[in-house]
Length: 111
Image 1 (cartoon, one colour):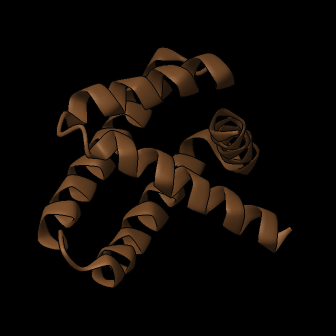
Image 2: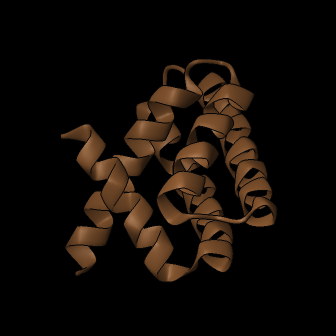
């Protein structure tokens, strides 16, 4: 189970890293929150909270990408707390099952 969650977390990091590089945090956050809203059937209030979390995460990722542009290990280390914080906040809204469903969706999109 731990290996599956680790794999899903890494996949999610790669997916969102790619989106974060678009330098349009609002667009990336909207994409993620719209997909989560549809997938998890979120109400309007929860959808707005998810968008805010995704926006904050994407902004922080953009900052880390700029700061660690030539330092892969530094970037990797900087991303961990960003994703951890976002996942904890998301789990508080959508629950553990919802977060697992979201990560599974991202994994399927990657394949």
